[in-house]
Length: 315
Image (tube, rainbow, N blue to C red; front, top):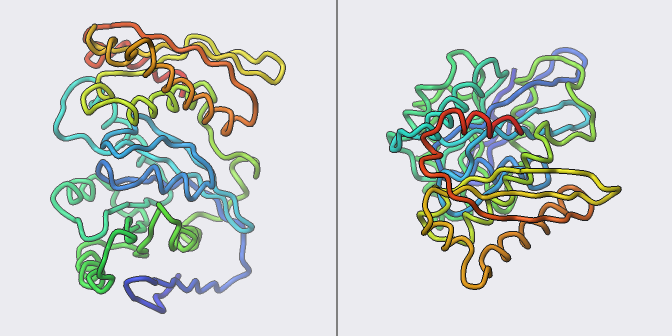
């Protein structure tokens, strides 16, 4: 059990009261929240490296990302979920909503992320999806953007009344403020267990999947508002040649005009996308990467259930 010792806009301290000898704990924690509240940035900060892609555009995450945090006394297996989709009803968004629902089934705890000073019906819709009786930690993210920190106090008090949370922790995933306190708040909620994975593992997602995600991130960051949502990435081949990874990828778009925009004048935009993605892959994989990227048109791919299901095979 635990009690709150300190409660202020910048500090929420959790005191763990342990009546027995401390034992190792391990379990699964789902990270949930509406689109664009910073779930992926928070997962990356907790794990200590870039696993989940990020951009300023909402709905960047489309599939579950697994991040593993191992400490001296606990192993937290984090499941980053897509933001729950309410506006678009194509097959892709139905798949994303199923990913959210599947991720919160059977977890040991839920980490619910809310943007500081922004709580509305979209967040309440997420709250209605959370499994009853599962321990909940509420992370109030983006406190670095709040000019008047005193404004956080009534906001936190309101959430405390509405949500049966084991802990409420104001954080900034962008700069790391109080992120360590989240680990401390989650640890006592996990069951006593030996580690579920090796201590040096940081994810259960395949390198093939992560490579596709990094390419997709650059599409989000280097193109306009429409194109990222009309594009997806498939890895055609992924081969190890000694310490070199040879990766051939195809970006699938819905229209010929999207293909032209993605390639850019003289291939300049596609070259930038591939170069930036390759550099991120080399940093994540810890080795050299040869990356070849090309583009093809497949009309209606976002409504093709079979095509979307096949894409999930690399996760």
